[in-house]
Length: 203
Image (cartoon, rainbow, N blue to C red; front, side, top):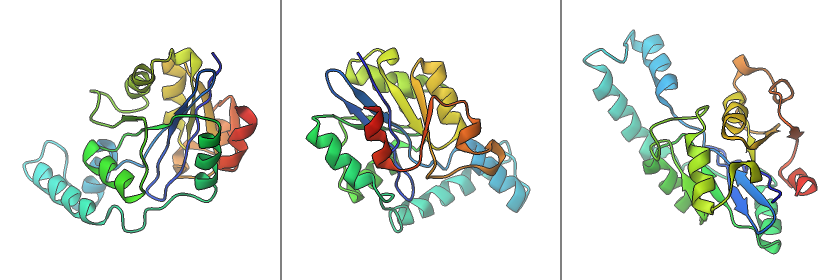
């Protein structure tokens, strides 16, 4: 079975998973306010470490504030809607794999009126990407072997997660590229695409 994973971007960033009898496109990720990022933020802004007494309360307050605004500027990247339409024409199912928690993922998907067939969030498994657990969970939900899947992402950790899961890694040139990770061309992806519709060539 041939498969491909595509990343479908959203301004607060979303990735999606598609499946068919002979092709699977697993798009992955919603830009996450993950533990490591928050830890760096609180250390720089307040000199707080995760073990400090005030850290947990401030983290929860931050996430509550984020929940109030996470959909305010969230929208699909250009070309994503067209790609979703094309995938629908081809009878492909899709889903989302993200480091973002279920709490925020469900709100963003509802705001975007997206109804994925598969969702794996940062709290679905005990591990965040680049650990492959969430990708493997998604493949299991779709009833597919990891080797039958390809994975699209806009971050080096996406490519690491894909390889660790035994999926084909595909990098995208849009999205949220961390300056410390170089560009998509340096991530040893099997392919790099510049626009969502470029994925069609790989189906």
